[in-house]
Length: 292
Image (cartoon, rainbow, N blue to C red; front, side, top):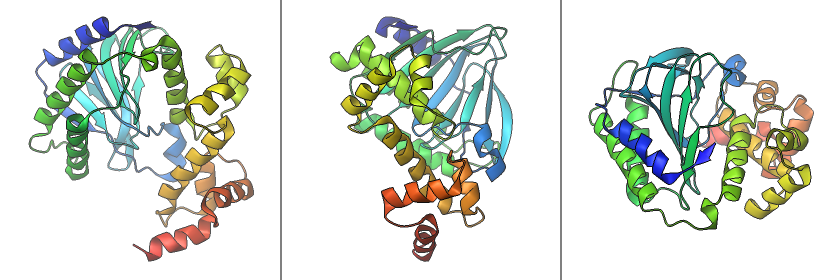
């Protein structure tokens, strides 16, 4: 992986030189037995092929679908989106993740034959999150996503997408680099993104440390440094936030929600949920549905 502002800007310029044709909005709602088949991404993000066809798996009208995107097409996911890249075609793409602390931009090239990449070829992240203008565009696109129907693109959505990518380019170009733009901090951002995407799956401190070639004790120090809590506290807290969203669906029982959040045993899930919310999942749901 190469951390380079200049190279990342070159690939963003390649994307901006294309004629924007189509926007796919990634959805979230899935049947409970499918929840673990596609990752939940907590932050708004976009991906755009700049050469070759790009196959992506996402949610449309409550169903898993595979979609082929061509250069000029963009897939946008509001916060809490579900879409995964399927690296089975010869392609080049750029992606942007709008985290609440940084903007992370990536470029990936893949021949469609090798195993899926373990990370981008080129990446860059800013020292700060997207500014007020970019945030306004993300909110507008999120509202457009809520209004879109299958196969339709709300008026103005393509112009908003181009405006958002232009804003990303501006913020990367004008970014004042500090310690948050170092490779060390970037390693943390990569680890943190991986955990957020995989939080409902089996995660252990040792497995993550091995994956990123760091000592488990160093991973613990990173969590204390950047999050102020332990690794396991962060995982449980994040899973309970997902549980709160799922509890709003009366068709899901507590066992199904526990499993969807990454807990093998419902009793343990209930105990963890009570720790963070001072009430049981069942009582929390009763209050949630009463207040609707």
